[in-house]
Image (cartoon, rainbow, N blue to C red):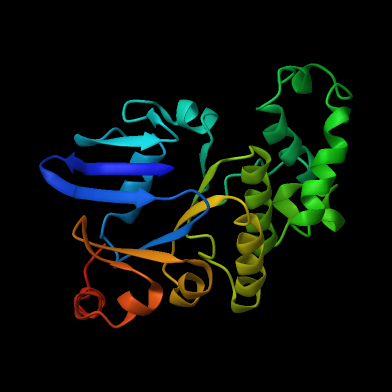
Length: 247
């Protein structure tokens, strides 16, 4: 297994947001974590990516115990996360956003800030990635000028520039208009080729099209898992969503 969480618990002032979760993610799989608002999905992502520390349990990634590592250390091992809200540099060009990410894995990382031309050697790989994410026409625009759907595509480009072994995507279609959902699904599907992906997603059409395995959370616990077809009509899943859990 590339990623394993064992009996993972996170408490906040006595409230268990994640309550004894076991998770197994094989290399090359695309796994979706779903559940109603307040189910613990984002907290679980925060735990897996090192943004918060578990109250109990353990996390292993690619043969390493990452339970106590911070987010930067986890990312350096190849487990990289995106967020619901775009997290690109708004007043930097689209190309330079990607180059900054590429430099994070390069020994000349400081040179980007020292000289305008010091990172020119990364123009070619940056442009190749922008072409793959269908952003070539926007390479010289400021990120702030992009339509929201293109900003999500840029965030994916920045994340892929870090060359992750495992990509955590937190609601990649959140806030998108109907016309932007299909292009993002296609981009995520392409990004998942030869890579392991775990996504939190509220749009069941997205889950059905992307995920081979689905894990359903409720009240911080795994209540069901399996293929999309097997969980879709499961009585526990139907009850969880119709129960209208508050955020």
